[in-house]
Image (tube, rainbow, N blue to C red; front, side):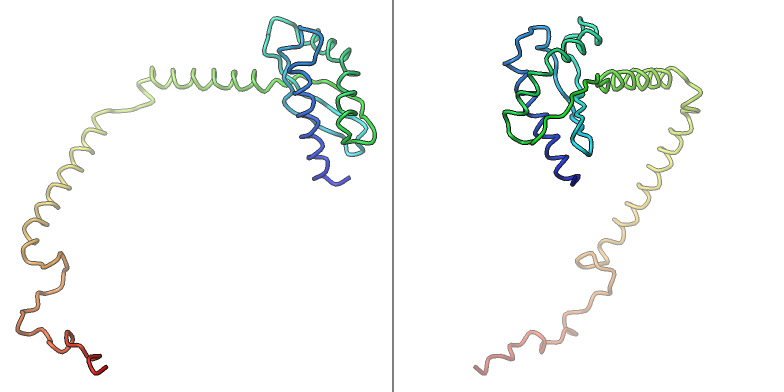
Length: 179
């Protein structure tokens, strides 16, 4: 089947299932479940629904069991949308992306903490101060040179000044006055 059509069906199924779980689900333990991704097999026979739970009090295995019991409800919602001729078998998988992101953030924070507390990482601070002072001295000497020569140039150009009596008056005359 065309991959574009499968992607469109996956998005539509995900939308349908999330809307169904927002208000129509009978089991209150599933109110914190949110579906993050839907993946259809190429033959449209199997649908994997990835979810995460906003309420971490219920174990994942119990949530998967509750979702398996509600798969008939999900199949009815998909069938009611009339987007597929055959309703696929549904498999639920826990999406651990949020936990992986949290773990990566913890690792990055610990690395940043170690960098801040490790003086050997930053090296000699006097070196940075010396460079900054040298840079300031270089800039100040360039500015002084510019100020001294600024009066020699008109409009800031490096060309020589042309005396007013050498300007060609013909370039300022109107040649199109014959009309």
